[in-house]
Length: 338
Image 1 (cartoon, rainbow, N blue to C red):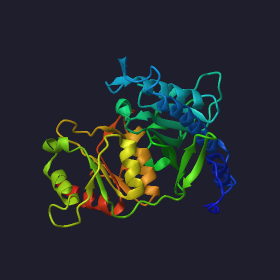
Image 2: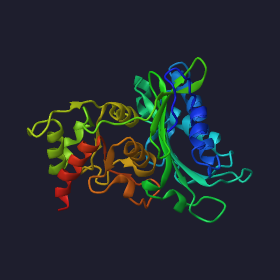
Image 3: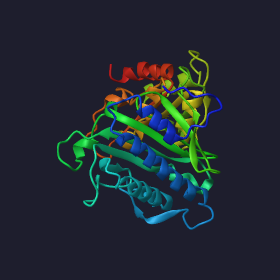
Image 4: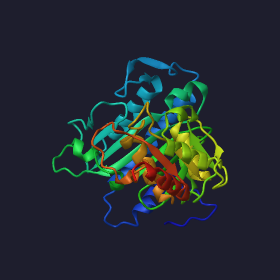
């Protein structure tokens, strides 16, 4: 971990380079990927900030691979990330929540040793009501032998991630990421157009203050999940009640809980028996981040990072946040399979 004085100004580029010096064998490819993502985040920030002033709000006629009506900003964010990442010679393939298949690197560009999975604009349906949204990303090493990336390169368990992060577009824009050596946050200073280190070495409290869950699905939860939610609310007398805070934008809910401590839960239910959130684009990267910050994530049975994905757009239940609160979830939900 690089030490900085309280008065030093550390840009994300400087921080990435200084971190790279700790690994003499590094090729610089991963550093370049992170810098390209930061650039894409700046471009998306500009559009999000102007969303109410230009013709970019609302939905298009098309649906994405999930069967959801695509938002205009979704399409812009997806294209921005692809174009920012496809020519640098660092990636062999990409996968997006918005695309039905893996995204190949164009033939005119060199292929690299990494794959990138991303959700270009999580929570974009909330843009019209000015709720924070975000970009989520995950980076893994190429494992196949060919020049171009293949599906096998993408379908790796989360524990093989070498980097993961998110960019939240709210009252300020922040990029939070990990390369497996702690979690660090950078706030975009619009006056100079640079991400500056603002939250070094983030640690999530072992017990959280906040519970983020969509209560409208309670009628569809099984009894162990209902009992867990009663426990979190302090209704069974076993622990202090958590405050319920649910924005409905995964990045916003996760970011608050990462800094203040808490649990985000999206259990499986009779309407979505396999869960709703996407393993590759949401669950894996956020699980890697929270684990590096001292927290944990489970699907209710397995550690999220140990699950081997079998589909590009595989869905999963998710319980993620403070370590002790997730341990409670594991204990109580284990009754379903005991």
